[in-house]
Image (cartoon, rainbow, N blue to C red; front, top):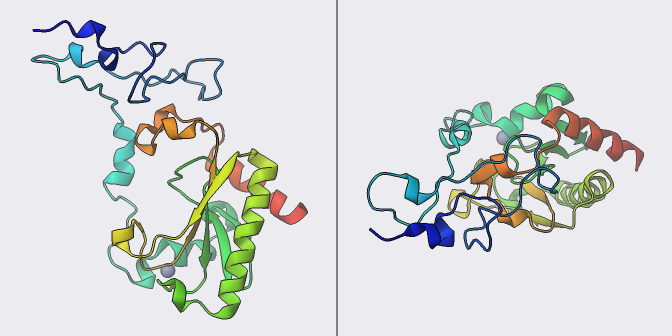
Length: 219
Ligand SMILES: [Zn+2]
């Protein structure tokens, strides 16, 4: 059995560096990514029985709500569609940030990053080419407005904008078009959504929604 303690990949110490997996980047108290609770620590391969395979383990059972598809629609019908349902709820409940004539902005319940917004047409249409001229223009305007709002509230360093067209392209709800507006901060790519406990999520959805909604009206 080899001495794995000298292998940087097997160290659980979050201060060790460099770490090719990125899992041990600084997340402790006083760092920008400090979420306010103990940092998730990777379990070193050396701690498992049998021959170590060199991979650390990050246990993320809380991700099972999403992975298990608890809120996933049973089919592609409007009846099952969360993007058809959200505008029918009060803003606070549906996490709606702003309502236009043809489209609306809503917080993503499963954000890639804090403040991840979605711009959806009210109509249950799947394909970008299905949009009317009015929907196309307002979707673009809401995307721009979202960027202004997120910049003023959250100060991101950049954005990812885009639409996943079809389940094969990664659309979670492929039947109802939605434009992603994902704020990005320098260094946030060190932590993939699957290790979400290492992310800085300083505010719950309801607080973010309220801040964005107010900024949307006042900017
Ligand atoms: Zn829909």
